[in-house]
Image 1 (tube, rainbow, N blue to C red):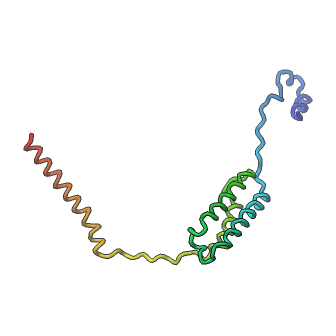
Image 2 (image 1 turned 45 degrees about the vertical axis):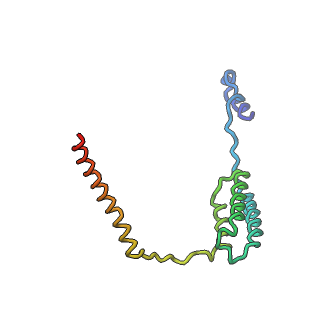
Image 3 (image 1 turned 60 degrees about the vertical axis):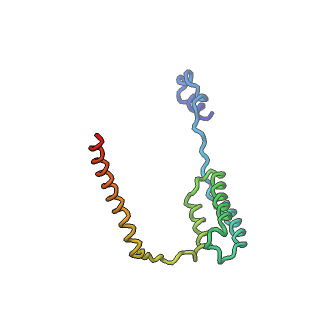
Length: 152
């Protein structure tokens, strides 16, 4: 409405042919309310902390003991971010999830895995099987080609 008043004032002759009210307007885009997003993440986090209180701290590194609680926490953060028009994940959500991980799972890093070569017998078998299969396939092809000469 305001635009049409200004347009009429500046160009009165042009308004005879143009109906400003019929010009399509861009849909309003809701912006992410970061304050509300942080509050919602705290709500999700408090629920997760409450549920993790029932899990023995010795089992915090074993995902099978809290997978459902973590799924609910993740779903909560995703749903609440979408509900308040924030994309997920975003830097605020990620930083909150990292804080949760540091609180509960900071001692869960595995010691460096030492890679050990397999026994020599295993390596020998794994090398010889393809070699013998290749030789068998070559022999089969040669045998079939000689046999087709006889049959022809």
